[in-house]
Image 1: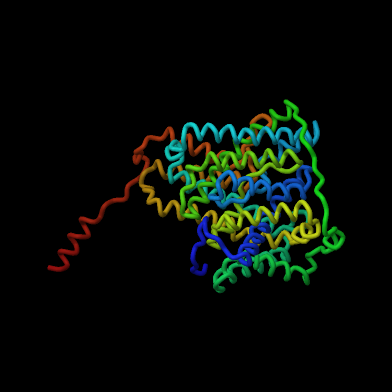
Image 2: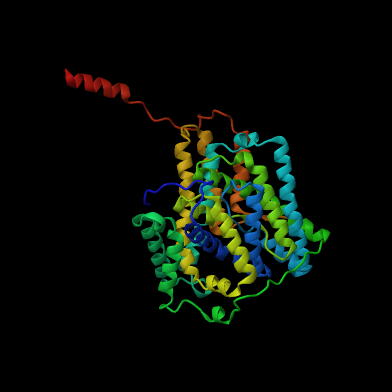
Amino acid sequence: MSDRREIQTDEKLPLLQAVPLAFQHLMAMFGATVLVPLLTGLDPSVAIMTSGAGTILYLLLTRGKIPSYLGSSFAFIGPIIAVATTKGIPQALGGLVVAGLVYVVVALLIKAFGTGWLNKVLPPALVGAVVIVIGLGLAGVAVGMATKGAGDAFAIKNLLLALATLAAAIIFSSYFKGFMATIPILLGIIAGYLIAIPMGMVDFKPVMEAAWIGLPTLTYPKFDFGAILIIAPVAFVVIIEHIGHLLVVNEIVGKDFTPMLPESLAGDGLATALSAMVGGTPSTTYAENIGVMAVTKVYATQVFWWAGALAFFIGGFVPKLKFLIQSIPVPVMGGISLLLFGLIASSGLRLLVESGIDYSHSRNLILSSVVLVIGIGMESTGTVIPIGDYVLPGMAAATLLGIILNLILPKESEGLMVESPDFSGELQAEAAAAEK
């Protein structure tokens, strides 16, 4: 990557730079944010609109200090489908409203008791491994987007388009200077899109048929106790994910936002509740947008204000622009994801290295090893742990197991390690004999 100055969270950029950077974040989150409503029967336009509104609400509650974008959460997909098919979508939305309030309750508890406990339950050996899991756990998704065609069969055309997009993003980031080097993701997507047109991989029909101006179709929640019991507890899984993402942001930006965890969680929870009140999807901080920051080194929250505003405007009131973005071929986003998710994993590796962790201690070795294998193994194979009506995904399961191990392993447990023989004395003697 080209060397360039980091743009810190409180810096202000000219409008002509801030808006393209915001579009870059908009495109990075778009595919996943739209996929959740498509799978659950919710409205994609409303999901985009509420992701923008939720991001703005989050920035308000965190006083514009934490750079994050809130998109649709995948953790709720199963419970939403289960409730929607048996009781109805309004009842599912009611469960999501309560789930959002669960975030807020947890945030208030953390506010009351402080965040000092986080340093004890989340040591560097565990945190670094969790960050790597967040990145590499999504590797299968990125590869699938880049290579799979109809019927999930391998498609060489898709792979070539994904690689061309990836190459374009790398070239813009590595060989260009100035503002061009800060929007490599956006430029890579545009390049991939233009390449896809002569390949016959862009469908312009929905774009041409869509209106320029339109209003969203809102759906309002109904509160059903059974639906709430199925959906609301999933909030605890997303809370763990949220903490993991905040730790990644800490590492990438170089600031410690952990003391603001209560505000961050409350923002995410209220965004989820607000979204569900009008028929939108539950929210979570997005790894894709964290990856964009890692590539561009632009952390200014001003850009996220703009990204939220653009998502709210386009999703809610400009159908043609929404369908234009939606026409971006999946392999184009797959090529970009190969870069974004890899950079998140790399930031975890950097955390492990810079923390100076001593891996001659079996405690550290066990913590990192177990989290990496369980987390990446479960995420890459799509394995989840069923718990009644809920499922525990790989990242959450690995984090919980890591926390438990951290609490029960002895502080100094070097006995499991096999130490290398010390030949230094023999070597010194041989060197002295040689001098004589």
